Length: 317
Image (cartoon, rainbow, N blue to C red; front, top):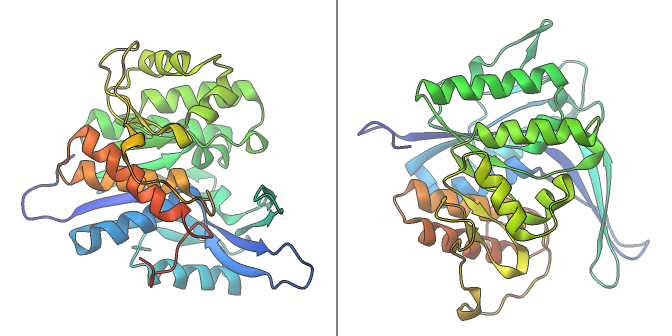
C-alpha cells in the first residue's frame, strides 16, 4: 500500500453524496442544509487528517442543478479532488432528511431512487472504469454497490479484482447495509460476499453483518468474515469498541480496550463508522500498527460523535 518514493499517495472514495436536511423537533425550527454520504464523509476526514501528504478524491456523479453546484463547491472547500467527479445532464443529487425525537432517536427519509450517482461508471450504454486508474487506494461500501445496476456492480467487483491482481491498487470495503437499496436480500448477500473477497482491508460493522446474514452472534460474524480470506481490518462494534480482523484466530481476536479510555459524550452518531474508517486508514497508511490504527479510528469517531451532523465544522477541526 505504499506509493513509490517521492510521490504523493492517491486515495479515492467511491459512492454517493446527498443533500442533508436536518429537521428540528419543533415546527418553527429552521431546516439546516448540509451535504453528506458515507464515502464522502470518510474522504473528508481522511483529507483533514492527511493534509497535504495525500491526495484524496471523491468519485461520483452529480447533477448540473444549483444544489449540485453547491455540493461541488462544498467538496472542493474540503480540498477533496473532484477530477473524477462527473456531472449528469438529466439527473439530480439525492436528498435525505433527519428528524430527531426527544430521546435522541433519529428517523431518516430518503429521496434517491433517480439520483445522478446511480449512473456512475455508465457512459453511452457501456461501463467505463477508467476513472479508477492511478489510485493507490480505493474505498467503497455496500451503498456504493447497491445504487448501481446489477451488471455494473458485478463488473465493478471484477475490475477491483483485476486491479488488485495486477498490484495496481488496494481496496477498502465497508458493509453499510441498507435493505431498501437492494433488489433482494439474496442479491445483497451474494454481492457483499464478493466484495469482502475482493478487498484488502475490511471495515465491517457487526450490526450490518448480522442484519444482512442473520449471524446469531459476534463470533459467527468473525468466522464468516475470515472464511472470505480477510486478513486485515477491524470489526466495528459500537459502544463495545472495535475488534481487529487480522486472521489471528476466530476464538481470540484482539479487541481495543476502551474501558481505559476517556468517557465518550455522544451527541450524534451520524458518520461514526465513516469517521472511524478515516482515522484507521490514516494511521495504517502512515505506518502505524494494527492496534494503533484501531485506536486512531476510535479516537476519530469519538471526536465526530461529540458534535451534531456527519461533518463537524472546520473551526472545531
